[in-house]
Image 1 (cartoon, one colour):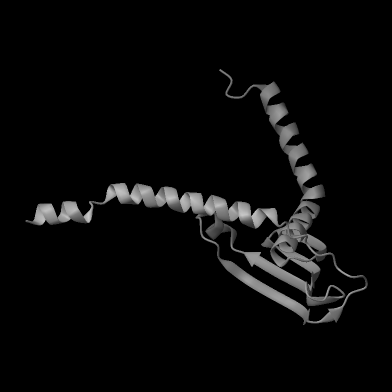
Image 2 (tube, rainbow, N blue to C red; image 1 turned 45 degrees about the vertical axis):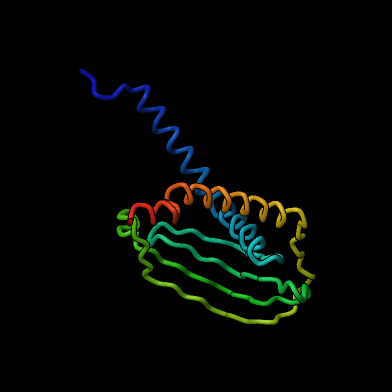
Length: 161
């Protein structure tokens, strides 16, 4: 009786190896791009990151040369960080808890002139009104469902007398 089929085991090893190689080659750039895009959307102006280095032992990452554009003055950075290091406890992470062993930030500067002006995020005028309408509709539906869940004042008076 065979526990493992050789063809399945070879396929698993090849797939896992390929996944690890692709991950190690591209994951740093994917994380860098993700940080830049999400931070730019939050800030409302361009955020640049020179590089990101993910480490497995200890689990964490290093971010180098972060430049946050000042949205009021695109020719300047509101914040520049030379290096940020984060070290997370892997065992606690598996238990669902985030425990930070070490966090270091070096080379912080503010109001630094940029080599080229940063790009601003375009504000779409239609989004806020659509968002407000969706929020109002949600509030109205919640209000109706809550109103039907509780008795009316007339019913409370009738029950108490």
